[in-house]
Image (cartoon, rainbow, N blue to C red):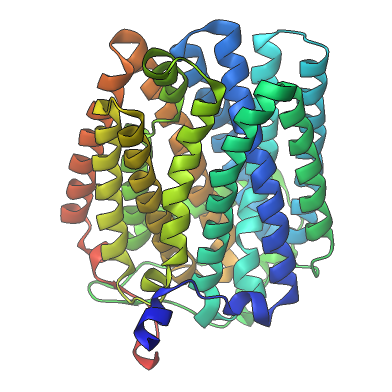
Length: 443
């Protein structure tokens, strides 16, 4: 019984920190509304264009600001109060969501306007995401960090499970404007939760307690910021230097480089969301409810994996877990490309969702444990760009391949390429597989 309980989701972070509990609950609400908006954007662009290429372009217009402002957000997070950064960027996201709702109510019918607003919201999210990613490390003790990340992942997956299905129903009953309006309300909840957090000014490196992970293999190269860097004015030269420092740290550390490469292999080659409207149209009649079920099925698998995340968060072998999960993701996406019955397509997506949650949880914990706090914002910005822009670019790739051949070819070929790429990373970056959680022997 004890072993079974250890395999289940660890709820201790919700008990030990009121701030973390509030942040997690607000994320659940915001995630639910955000997933409804994802379905709304997919449906609206498909209705305006009837083109998988334009649906895939949603990913491109999200990826560009993600890359540019995501890297900038890392420098901002390490130089300014992280709470203040998140409050301001969340406010911008709420305003853009209101604009999306307005254009839907007025039936403007402008594809450039929709894409521009999606890009603006993506940019605001990217600018604040590196700072937001550091909250867990500030609010929880190190032994509970992986559990806190897993709880966030479960909250996201629960939102993704329910949100798209509700989005499909809401579009059928009330139209896309209702989804956009609820998205705006969700951002206001997130804004309130961020405002209630304590101030989170930069921590100079000389005041930081070391939390480096244990590695079996060559020593890792550390990226050190100058002493007192967090207290200097945020000037252009320093911002550029900070951006380069985050990239340099990532490139020089084999664990970070390999872990991010695994994530890129999964998302660039095998991200299937842009294919959903076309597959739904060709195989299942184009019902918006079915479109929502595709996204919800991914979340069902993710939620089940999250409930059993104790198997991940209590393991010392996070690298092996990420490699295995990314491989399963690729196989499941390839299976989705070939599945004809609806139940089989949904089952493949559920398996993919479970693999995705497992991979993301293990990767995020490794990044936090392998990075010192005074450079965590910059490294988190690289993680955010890869974790968000990767799927967006993957959607663009999938849309292009589907436009030239078919959505089935796009999904199957992407899944196969994902598996091959993950195996290549495992061979060229053995440090990922050898990664060990510090102090794990005491548990």
